[in-house]
Image 1 (cartoon, rainbow, N blue to C red):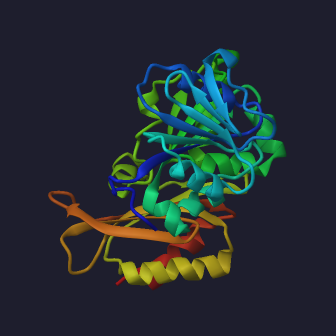
Image 2 (tube, rainbow, N blue to C red; image 1 turned 90 degrees about the vertical axis):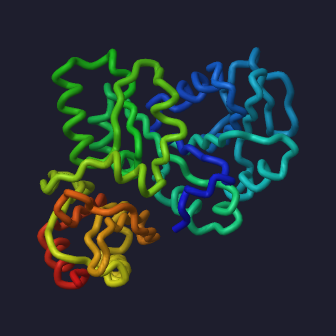
Length: 322
């Protein structure tokens, strides 16, 4: 996995969310803001780009230029191919936004940024922002497994259409979201209006940022649903090489059921914290800073499908402990 600390790379934000959650509304809101960024927008939805025509000043094939310096294009073919085509253009961008289709999981797109050499040299995944239709999410969750996955992979979740639900309904929804993904930040929005600092340049896949903002508790957020999170906390030492091997073994046993994992580990022979994260089984880890006055403790969060907290904890301690 490649670190997003390479400052020569262009940050990319993935906008995810089920059909009707408000992704295009958010996109239009971002494009109209006086943010001073030259943003390239890649549209991966079915149909044409729904950009207000008065903001479009010129078109070249399937690429539109906006009056505020933004560039928009719809995908014709492969995402990686489209990204490379954008990077070869004369214009210099500050940022790339990808609106994924409402029927897609964010996982494979996130993984593409971590395994595609050409892309990872030029681009870094800054974050996955998932929009949730607060009014209709319960029906969507019951009917579409991909909605759970979009929430599971998110760094930031916008609980959109907040004006259409009552306070008790919103509290119940927030609790449900936290059970699926306890590490994501949530914001209540109406018409997808949000402070852009909450969704852009957030360093969601930068190890240090991702783990400093993560909350680790020792509860097992097992729900009646298939997708949930498991948080583990235990003393002792962990061997990062054995952990990596354990994660690979987990992949063989569990298939692609572990979507994301992140943690702070106590490694034998080092006084520094070891940070790690994974998307599926793409593993990245490095030493961070001394534990200081804090007692060293291993803290990990796993988000995925059909996770068994007891089995995870036992196998992890047996294998990865130094």
